[in-house]
Length: 374
Image (tube, rainbow, N blue to C red; front, top):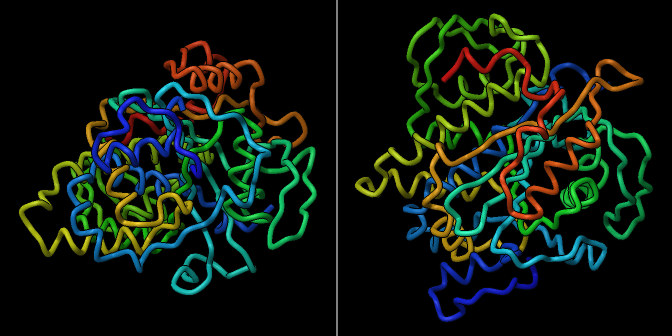
């Protein structure tokens, strides 16, 4: 982040130098209980699949917002390891302020209902994604916000880290859980998600059975669909509308993971290079939708990162949910499986594939919805 990791290609282009900023190894109301992983993965999909929009970003610096994670966390972080990989924490904000008020009352702050750690492997040809469910019970570390110390908790829901301490506390919590230093941070909210889907011209999916969910205002018969922004938001919010699903947030994550791959394919195939107006609209919408760490909050840096990740397709993304089981105290919460979670974090730390053994006995990828949308 603030300090570039070692790279043997220091004479390469700006785009390659930007890559070096990665590790070279380098009980709320129901309406608030909306997982926002796809709001997160939307930005990653743009970065992974949208390198072509970079050349107009120079006009759009004023849209970007940055958070100085390095200054906030100082040296109290995992060590940078130089193995050519990169880790990006992508969060979704569910603030109900302003235009987001239609999704529920503003209760004075935003939460990150779900986070995604995107690990880009050495060579930038493939990536692993680990979803952390919002209601995972974890040990939250002490954080600082606006100069005030915020005591940690031995037992807290994961999404409270962002609520009490903002992006820096969310990053610190993930680093504490994983032992992996996050090289970058990206955040997006509901409104930005919808607008970017609309700017892309929608996203194509196929449903094998009807989805009907009055809560998320989504009604889709079986078959092929091009979802607009409102429908896409409905899909990633739905829990009870999919036949065969278990009605849980874990089932919703499965839908979201399926959706992001469809989104990545859409970004790859949208044809923006031949349509300058659409190109600018997408770039304008994307830069307004996101908040990043200060190492990414310029169009040049985002362009360099996008170019370095542009060769990763949806077929090269391995998406999993953090290995979890039902919480021992509250059955409406989940807790990490210690041994299996360690296998996940150890694999990413060593820039290796996540082993199948890491998912053994986990309920994280068993929400019952994976076969209904593609």
